[in-house]
Image (cartoon, rainbow, N blue to C red):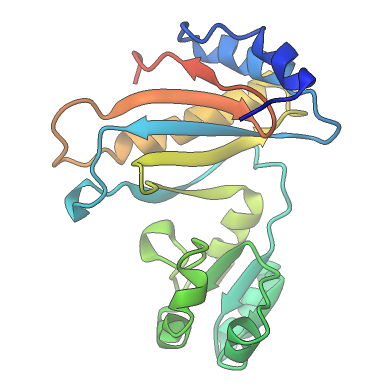
Length: 229
């Protein structure tokens, strides 16, 4: 993959052989953010898990203390008095059965997170083929299947993110924007790592966290020292 001049300049600042301590890595990542837009800072965590085994799955959610810097659009599937509750909590879209054809046939996907009350999962299940591949399917482990829609919506709007293994057993999550100051990124990173360490599957033998890399949307990866985790 050919990279542009800006990427090449930024890459010169990073020693690929070094695992930096977190504060150094964050400072470096901010330095390498040279795009004209406010780049997202992401963490990529390579694990020793084998996600093909259910007992080695890593999945959950964590509220980042300083949010992600992104406005998150929330869709809530609910009925009865839960509809008004979701609207009052600030959900961007609330509905039920009538939303199925919009999503299935019209390709409507103007939302980033889907929350559902348990009694709506039969309806939402019909959207599995659309929502599943996009990682939008509500899940009890992530707190997106719940009767407490107020808490779910508030947490998501406050900066709650989901983490899960991809097919290569790597976790990819945002921890803020390049415009955030270093202390805010550090707090978000610490909150994320605490949750990931707690989520270590008891069935896992061997090393859990193989590598941790911080990178901006357009910038080079900066390796973080895994020793403390």
